[in-house]
Length: 230
Image (cartoon, rainbow, N blue to C red; front, side, top):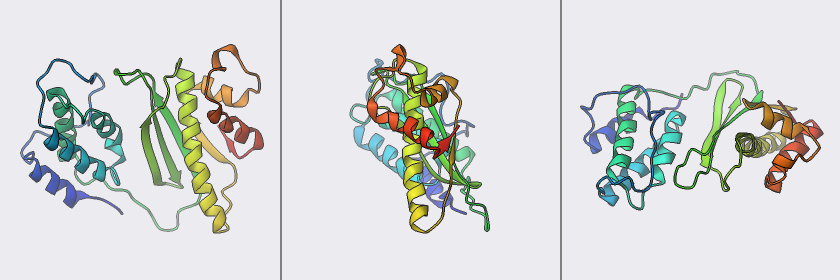
């Protein structure tokens, strides 16, 4: 079992949030952060210190990685609204300080990937955010959330890019097991967008998806080879 409960307690003490009111979510669904919303500026050094401490915490707390990553995009000129969003994450940690990653003995070696995308969620440049998680049996072994490099023109494209990134990580994990003589077989990826799944299976280039970056089409190739399936 892996956790950072002691670090969380020290973190809350360091930033004077030991007595804050707990809250049960790290970020509100209605939160819309922009570069400059007219609110007062805050001290950059203090804000960056909070972000750096929270980024270190994401090594065991995948539940805050999206909200921390979002707040980390405003380190150059942080505003009061950005600081408020960071403090909400600390309030959430106050609510659940003992969440841990559990790795039971004797679990199976079934490798599974989950992919999702938050379409055009970043209001500054309207780029989507990819999210992924990889499980080995019941154990979470890898996770990430990243802003996509280019603006997706529609939801299916954003989901397809997220699925491609998810498989890139699965491919690396698969190779590590192969080096130890473990065959993971065909790896399932769970994606909640039917259009993205159909794009990976359809060999015809449709008018709407011709502009998708070529590097993401390796996902389709691996579906065709039978290395992954939906």
